[in-house]
Image 1: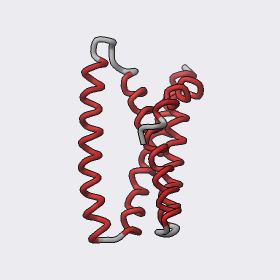
Image 2: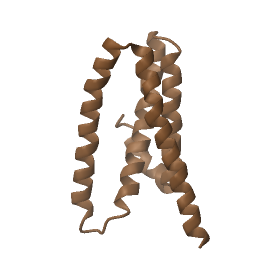
Image 3: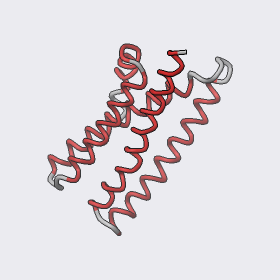
Length: 137
């Protein structure tokens, strides 16, 4: 989850923020597909790897993207606030996923993950279109 952070920044500098975030969305979607394919150890390991790298690409990309909107004086406080909300959401979703998997099952948990991944993909496409319009004018 955090290990890819050693090279994610370099990838963002080379390919751009939105493309790396798009790869993160694709990796998360692939994670769901692998997780839904079965519950063997190999599937868990592959799904966790895909989830970790995908999450890192999205986290680092979104942090980079959001901090571009702040002045240098505001960036430290903004990053602190953003990280607080990200990790509070992670804690809440960790507890929620535990409840979901024990009450509703593994399959429903993974199908439920499709909604935020699809929403993130749609928002990335929208953001890319907005950037294209700004460049055209």
